[in-house]
Image 1 (cartoon, rainbow, N blue to C red):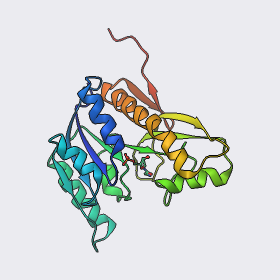
Image 2 (spheres, rainbow, N blue to C red):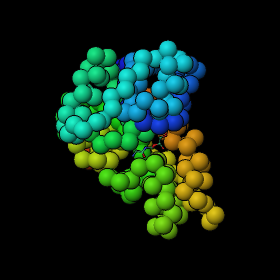
Image 3 (cartoon, rainbow, N blue to C red):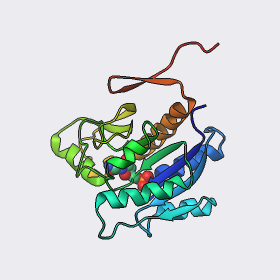
Length: 211
Ligand code: GAR
């Protein structure tokens, strides 16, 4: 097994975190969550973690540089020695140290079909607004490894949903949510199995027989 102990980075509601906690409780994901780190004290995700007895940490960004902020986040994470870091709605871009400290040990869930509608400025409801404005007939979510370039690392899994004629950014987000949850859980399961490899910018499931 490649990993067991997860750390989560969150900023908001934490429905993705909840889906992973539920999968763990149901016995369908063989991991533990060592810590949930947020950049905001008010994040509902923190309450979800605390109510399950999971340690929480808040690292607020004040006036420091992105690099100094990144160093503080890394310093906190190191205390918990996670096997895999899951960015699930963390609304800050971290500096280069983050990806270089944890190569192929950080994954991120993003609410679009990357490489479309990704990068700086594309987060949360803004992504869905941009999808609708573009006229795209499909949207979806992407779970990918985090590298130095924002939203560009090797793609682990994607799921699609159709865009309906009467969709609003909110309705699109709402319909995507459960799909994103199962895609994230399945991606963590795959990454933790260690049965994958990277070709180009794709993570391929290892289908070779294991003797
Ligand atoms: C998720 O849809 C996630 O893809 C998105 O924020 C939401 C968090 O929801 N992340 C980004 O937009 C990052 N670029 P949650 O707090 O309920 O899990």
